[in-house]
Each structure stands twice: as C-alpha cells, then as structure tokens.
Length: 85
Image (cartoon, rainbow, N blue to C red; front, side):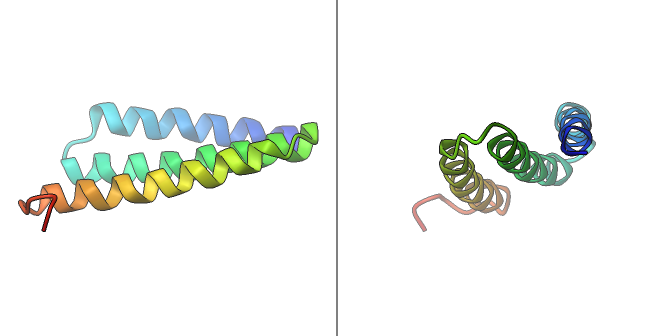
C-alpha cells in the first residue's frame, strides 16, 4: 500500500514538472514549484517510513524551509519589489 502512495507521488511530481516547463504564466509555474516541493517532502517521508532511515525526515524539513523561502522570494520578485525591501 505504501508503494502505491510512493508511485502516486512520483507521478504527480512529473505532472508538476510538466507545469513548470510548459506553464502559461509565471504564477502557474510558481505554484507548480511550490507543490513540487510539497511532493518531494511526501516522498522523503514515505521513504523514511519504508526504510527506517530517519535522516530523510531532516532532509524533508530542510527542503520545505528552502521551498518556503524560495516561494517568498519569487513572489516578491514577481510583484516588482527589490529583494532588500
């Protein structure tokens, strides 16, 4: 059952990657990158449960923090503001 969830997350990751590459607007690409980050965290958690290697949880936490910072930075860039404001 857990393998099914892993395969579904991987398939959804490819769909998000498609939206990043062929998204019609920059906002669509930004949302796809954010969702891709969430899917990667889910994959890390499922792999940690399946293999018993808990360092993958640390990787997932670091990934979600970097994803959040990247989303904030990209949103600020798209509004036309400088990054130091």
